[in-house]
Structure formats: C-alpha cells, structure tokens
Image 1 (tube, rainbow over the protein chains, first blue to last red):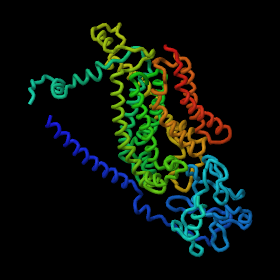
Image 2 (cartoon, chains in turn cyan, red):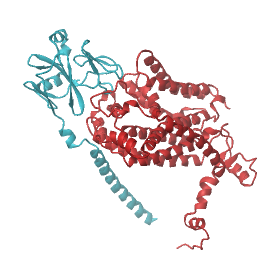
Image 3 (cartoon, rainbow over the protein chains, first blue to last red):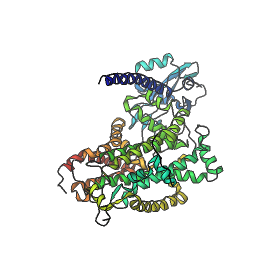
Length: 174
Length: 404
C-alpha cells in the first residue's frame, strides 16, 4: 500500500527524533549525578606540621577522607630503603608520611601500631609499613599520597606543589 | 457509543464497564494449579504478603524519615523509635520483613532448583525470578544506607569501592555513583530515591512479569509430571473433580496458600515482637563516622555467601568471582543439560550437586560472618572454589543423566 509507505516514513522520522531526545536525556541524567561544584570546591585542607610529635599518627580530614600524617623518628628514617624514602614528605629536616588513610583493598582505615612502626587493617588483615607501602595482602598497592603543597611549616592538601609533582613523575604516589 | 443495559447490582454495573467477571475468571477461577504439590508451593504467596508488609510499613516510616546526613540517624533512632506512636512497630516490621523476605526467597529458589521448575518452557519464570532477586538485593542495600549508622556508611564505602573495578581504579565511576569523594549527602539522597521509589517500582513491574511468565507453562509439581492443563481443566469443569489432576487457583488453592501464609505470619510477628534484634546490627546504632572504621565490616546474613566469594581472593580475581556468583544463577536453565523435570533425588548425580550447593552456600554464609583469620580464611577459600567448580561441572554432571 502506498499509504503504508507514508506511515513507515512517519514512524522512522519519529523514531529518529525520539532517539535524539533520548540521547539528550541520557546526557542530562549522567551529568546530574556528577559531584556538585560545591563538593569539588571544598577540596582543600591546611595542616600546620610544626607541632607534630614523632611516631604519633595524626589523622586529618580532606575531601571526607582521613589523611595520615606521621612524623618519623631519625632512627626510622635511617633504617629506610630508598623506595621508602622516595615517598617521604620532607619539611625542614623532618621526614613525614602523608597519605590517604584508606586501605587500598576495600577502603577501610588501617590502625597505626607505634611499637612496630606499621599499619594493620582490621577488615581483611592487610599491612603497610611506616611509609604506607603494602607489606601483607590483600591490599594490592601502597596507600595513596594526596596532592600536596608545602608552604614553610604548613602543608596544603589538594594543591599540587613541586614536591608532589616530582613524586608523581617518579611514580611513587600510589 | 456502545449499548449499555440497566445494571441490577454494583457487580453487574462494573462488569458492563470493566469486564471484572472475565478478569476474575481468567486470572483466578480458571487459573489451574496441579494437585500434587506441597507447602513449598505457597512460598510465592508468602513473598507477596511479605512484600506488602514491607510497602505498608515503609510508607509509615517514610512519614518521619529525614534523608539528610545530619538528621537521618536521629529521625530513625529517636523520632521514629521514641516519639512516633507505634513507630517502633513499623520499624521492626520493616527490618524483620526485609530480612525474612530473603529467607523465603532462598527457600523459593531452592524449591525451584530441587524440582527442576526452571526447565522446558519455564526458563522465563526462573529468569524473571532471578531479576527479582537482584532487584530485592539492590532494594535491601539501598535501604541499609538510610539509617546512616556506622555499618550503613562503611558498607556503602566498601560496596561502592567495588566499582573502581580492582586495578582499573575507575575513580571517576565511583565518584559519579557517590556524587562525592566519599559517601555523603548526595549519596544518601540518591539511595533514598532508589529505595523508596525506583527500586519498588521496578520490583512491582517484575512481580507482574513473574506472574505473567507462570501463566502459560503453569506451575510445576512434585513429580515433574507433564500435565495437559487444557484436558484436566475440562474434567474439573465437567464436575469430575476427583479425577482431574488440577484445582482452581481461587478459591481452592488460595485457601491452602493463605493457611501457609497464616503460619508464616505467626512466625513473623513472633520475630517482630520478641526477636527483632536479629535484623538489627549493633554497630549501626553508632552514627556514621567517616574517620572511624568498624573493626569488622560484614553485610547482612543474606549477602554473606557472595561476600565470602569476594573475600578470600586477591582484589581482581575476587571481583571476577563475585561477579560470577551474581550472574551464574541466571544461566541455570541452560547449564542443566538434562531434559528431566523431576525432583533432584530421582536424578542421579544431580542429587549430590544440589545438596553440595546448598551446604556450600550455608558454609560460605557462616564464614562470611567470621573474621577472615587462619582456619576461617582457608575454609572460606575452599568453599568459594567449590561454589565456582560446582557451576563449571554442572553441564557435565547433567549431560549423562539417565531419562527418568
């Protein structure tokens, strides 16, 4: 039927038009679930390191995540391998571990054991050394070093300073 | 305009306009159920009633719940529990029904596996049922987030971390799902939306589909006997009810169904009034704290088996095994190569396969609750491997099966 030819054409036009609308709707749906600008903007935390005690773990909050800041004793630094020292954040003469305090297995928070100088994750038994490097499974990688910038005795989390960029190039941030 | 006669009763008036008599006949009075079935065939109705309880109690909870990270915990644990008259009742009914519904789903599933109710024309019943299981899982998980206690928060953290897909580290995807770097307001709001609107809507649609898939192949029976429903229903309608192998759904079978439902409700309300604590995790009575992990994160009992398939392996293989466990049940009708529709105990090697699977899943469930140390890790790993191997060998086990 000639009539049906016209109806088929109408159907195809509608279908194409509807598909375009559908794609637009999908795009909008995807974007509406993105983190809000206010969430992204609140991503900077300043921490004063001058009063840090050696071998005492400080936990700061940055982007809703715990940040481990650990000042190492000179003995700890002396015993370290190059791989471990490469992850140290050095402020003046002091070496610090600065990392996101989440186990890289499934995101639990490991606990620091000061007498053993290591971290133990209670959830699945993972372990990390004082430089945040994984030493016992299941965590597959070291704890992540967040973007940081050093300003005198202060560290700004969320901004990429030259020391952080150097670490990133050397591939030691995670 | 069609021609209408004057109606002499409300029923007649509605029938003229809605054909309610035809509807009742087609959906209930001439929907045929085999005679040779047992109480396990009432689990569908038990599930329907439990879902009804969940919806009604959920509506009352929804009147006071606040989907806000600062208010959610107290709106549940103070407002609903202390201030709202009978709020405790709605909450405990909702929590207990949410837990018990999974117990019944598992019984319903294993009944289907045992009697071969997924074969020969009944594949869609099985598949739509599995879609319901997955939807109920999503519904349960999204609901678990809402009280915003410690276990809500950390279960949310751990489960959304699965979407970084192991070593792929798809952080963009995880943050998109959460709407934040960690579970927060955006996360709570969208899971609230999923729990109270989108998932229930999907579940209701799937229940409709599940009923629809049942209509043509009809209900299976204890012997896997192939019944000519056309023929048997004629006998029944001709008054030869003793000879006929079938009965009407309504009122014949429904009376038995409701008897089983009544027994279930006694058990259910016993739990609601005296043992609601089994559906409440003590850790979830601490408000969510992003800087403090509970020492041992575990899901509710009904997710333990699949959690234990994820846990004993390293990250990537664990994820693969977990994904496998989530989807493999869908393929049961196609992995079982035997045409026999019969109870497992008459099917030779399949009998052992069935009971090993059931025991294995109970072992996985027990290990999933225990901390992953020493012997528990080993047992968990063995049980997880057994689960995967069972599914791999199923086609071989059933291929050689003798005709029953």
